[in-house]
Length: 314
Ligand SMILES: NC(=O)c1ccc[n+]([C@@H]2O[C@H](COP(=O)([O-])OP(=O)(O)OC[C@H]3O[C@@H](n4cnc5c(N)ncnc54)[C@H](O)[C@@H]3O)[C@@H](O)[C@H]2O)c1
Image (cartoon, rainbow, N blue to C red; front, side, top):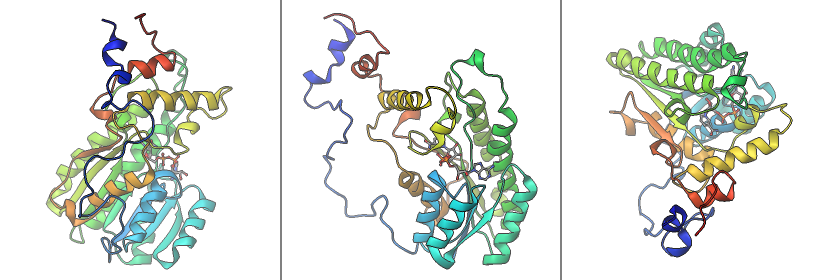
């Protein structure tokens, strides 16, 4: 029997094959719900979020501020960072930082200590994807230094400078944003994947080295979240919009949970790792990716729709 016939959702009323989320079959729980703001989970805490002016970082900044933290938004994007800080009032400050410059990062921690008097949570989120080439053989590696500088040196500098303070102040939580690209190999953006794998290994090593100071170091590995990041990897290319659309379609075809993730999903994970709810958790990598890192749901129907797979007759 043809594989498509075996897997066809149309013949199985209980198998979901569409793109809209199912209505949950479980009754709603009475407990804490994802995204629900308590307002005080981070009361009294000071956090830095690099890359906090946009995308996932912005979502983390907004959630941390909503939970009572004072937050320093560190970003290259001055206009967006200032606008966000102003919208959040006295609980947020903006600092222009290039995380690829360790001296900038040292200054960021100093600025935070001078402004808010402490630092309990460091989120090293700023990252760049580099250029997505048509094939491995087309890659000229011209973006290698930039990708490694922001994604690896930036995270290491943030970890080190935050930890130097935290080690003298009773500990803290460092959250490094990797990617499912750092957990799984693939055909494209190989420098990016290598940089994100480096973030995971560096974070685990830091978790071991810093445990004696009660500093926890964990990674979040996002995937499938709609932000400007993907478009930036094909910016300027002739068929950029079509490439982004096709890539998103392919990601959706492979993703176990069908809905697209949001910055709020990642912020929820960051909040858990920032608070004492995760007090016994260090050195982990938490994918927030709709299940993609677990493996792909090979959906032949959808691959056939995308033209990536020729369904056999019958
Ligand atoms: N969106 C996703 O699905 C996804 C998937 C996997 C991993 N990630 C990771 O999540 C993090 C955030 O990604 P995003 O999707 O929000 O990207 P984004 O491009 O939307 O936002 C990145 C932010 O970082 C800032 N930034 C870039 N370079 C910087 C530098 N050198 N110094 C300071 N700030 C800098 C940008 O100005 C921007 O505000 C990145 O580390 C990225 O690799 C995202």
